[in-house]
Image 1 (cartoon, rainbow, N blue to C red):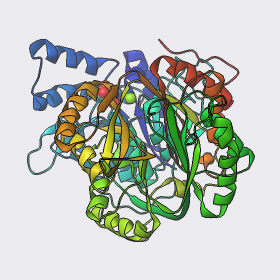
Image 2: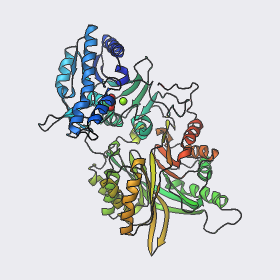
Image 3: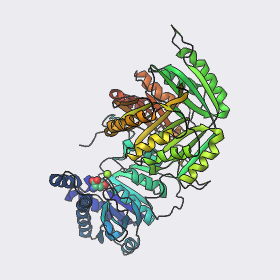
Length: 606
Ligand code: ASP
Ligand code: MG
């Protein structure tokens, strides 16, 4: 007998008939010998309707009253579903978040869960009842008993948190799509259903998967090792399993407000190869990394920042033992990247650096928290560590630093983020221990909602990144991809570098205005904003130790004559920034190149 938490989304409970169908499914699962806790969303588009009502009264409704209002949607569903179950002869009881004891912080409209009481839930389960819980809502502690909501889409988070608290065998998320697809089927109808994906991959694919599964739910599943499956409530198809490494016995106290960073990782066995001043045109990265993969050189980080004039610098890191081979490849290819008619002496120069280390912080909690990267940079600055390169992904920030400074950097970061030495995070490495080796690329995501900012000529000394991203965090601007590249130039006797990053498009103008002021005061160079960009990413835990994945992605773009403006990577993700109008074409080309297309076209539900 298993204890299962089932969550049904809005469309799955959108009408009386649908609620009856859900009751049938729950009833069948109970009859098969299981205990069930059901978590439900509001019926259909109820929550949207309530938001609209509020906006008819106030353009800026009080947030407390907003939570009071929105929490009513789920309360309707729990009562109706319990009645439907009782009609089938199945004992059932409905409970609001407050009745269960889903305790949250006192933050209206985006409260995070602090604790879940299990006594009452367990008592009803033991009495043979199905407990039907209102998703998306909780109650603040501190004696206030305020009704809170977890943020739109938050019922997923309620369900997984309850599964973690009850130590349920697994959690099923029922929705109106058959599971998680390799990419957005509206852009690529040949997108295919995945059988499984790891939590870390899912988090890196947040811009693709967030509509199907709330990232906070994935974070909890990962932290507590809750097996999770996303399935359609219309069929009996198996859906997509979202897997994680073995649970680490993490405490259930402060469930969602634990540390934003759960690991500090480092690798001193790295060396850097940079190709300076290569032409900024389609095909260059493809040629370089194509040759590198033919020579079976496994690269780790790849970083290409914004161009300057019409040339780029591309840098990558490799493990020290294969540096010689990587250098040979870069040197062999460099002449072909110089302009044939009129070669200039400084074109396509190969630069090596032996003594570098990569230091990273990892953790799902950094999603949507602008201060986390800034804190890393500030910590390094205080420790006097200069950052040579930066590359980020959704759940990781990696910095390349001088190898001699690695120990200092790591111990400062461990202190700042309260990580014990030797503590293992739920990082991508842990998940590789699973018996089946994952495919190199699991899915492809396109984000058309970003803008790119660059600050030219920031002095290259400790504290600059800290200052910049600290300011953005203070202004509550979330930064997505951060790239600090290789190119360093001496101006007025000071070595300087550019830093580029992406923000959500609606923050672009504000960020530019704020930074332009600061830049003038601090003597930084120009602040450049480009809103017409797209970010296309491939994600797959299997790309680790699999040379050639980056090359294949760049090659697919080159074949379509798409210029790559920036590149950033983590162990399980490669992201490229391209021109916005080429975004969809880039997505389609990459999806096809990795043979992710299925034989059938996916029909997008209306
Ligand atoms: N009803 C809420 C919403 O529409 C929560 C949820 O469905 O997950 O956002
Ligand atoms: Mg949802």
